[in-house]
Image (cartoon, rainbow, N blue to C red; front, side, top):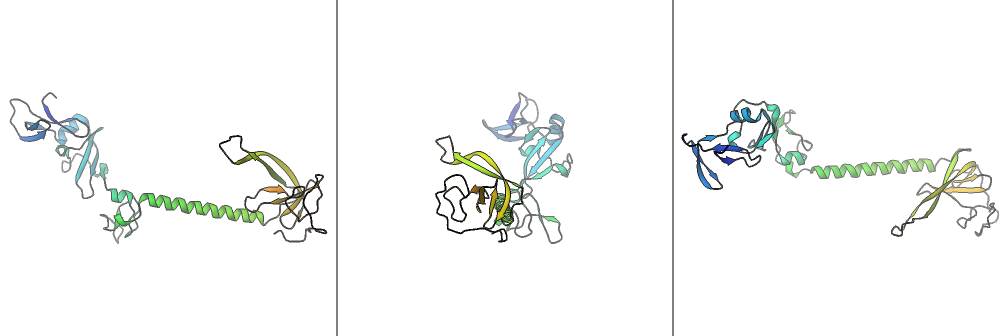
Length: 261
C-alpha cells in the first residue's frame, strides 16, 4: 500500500504501484507529474482482493463507465473486466439517459425500456427517441388525465344524486358553518351538523322534514340548506315558527306529482 502511486477516482483504492527493484511496465500521470509504475490492478487481482463482480456499467455505445467488485466501485480503465470471462451478462447495466428518460415516438417504447425493431427484438435507440416525451411530461399528462377522470366521475355522481329524490324516511345532514378562529385564514369551516328526516318530496329539489322545515339542495356543492324561515326563497309558503322576512308569492304550492328537477 505504501508503494501506491495512483488511486481510483471513485472509491480511492490504489490501482497502480511503483516498487523498488521491480521492472517498470509503464508510466502514469499523477498529481505529482508523470511517474513510473511496476504494477497495475487487473480484474483478476480485483476479484481476489474485493470480491466478485456485481455490476458493470457501460454507456449508450457500449463504452466502459464503471465496475463494482464486491462493494467497491471503480471507474479506472485498468479494471475493465470485459473480455476476462469473470462475469455474466446479468450484471451489465446500460447507462443511457435518452432511453431512461424519454419514450420513443418510432416504436412506442416507454422510458426505461429498450427500443424494438419490426420483429419485436431489442435494438439500439431510434434516432428520434430524444424527441419523444420525457418521463416528467408523461407523468404530468397521466396526472392531468387522472384528475379530469376523477372530476368527471364526481360530476356524474353528483348529477345522479341530484336527479333522484331522497327516499321517505332517509336522513339528511344539514351542515353548520362558521368563520375560522385563525385570523390568518379568511374562510369558513364546518361547525356542527344537524340531521333531518325526510317526510315528503316536492319539485325543485325540495323536501319537507320534521313536519315544518323545508330543505333544498345546492346544485354546485350538494349540501342541504333551509329555505323557509330565512330570506332566501320566494317559492314556498312560510310554515316555520320563526318570523319569515321573505315576500312569498300568494298561492304558491308544490305538488309531489311534479318532476324532481
